[in-house]
Length: 92
Image 1 (cartoon, one colour):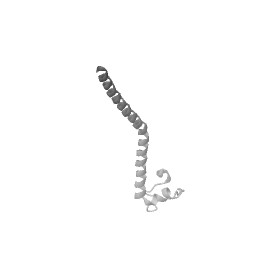
Image 2: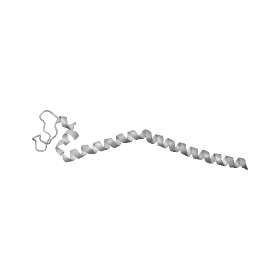
Image 3: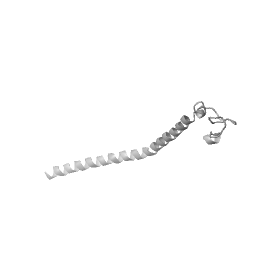
Image 4: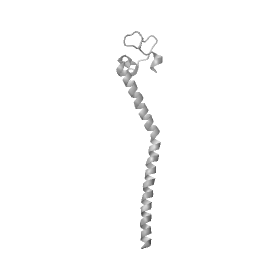
């Protein structure tokens, strides 16, 4: 009878150890993916910032959507005078 009790205790300990190993494996996988998740979160935040600029300043859209290259003399402002707009150096 004592032998069966010992086997039963051993089986329970084995199951608990398997659960701990599975938990550790999930935590390790999560830690491996964390840098990638942070990059995705950063990319989403930066993309959101760009969208805000494009919504607030529609005159900049050709530079982003139409792949228009900035050339010397381009004035990127709503009123065309260059005050408050972005120059090539300020855009990137």
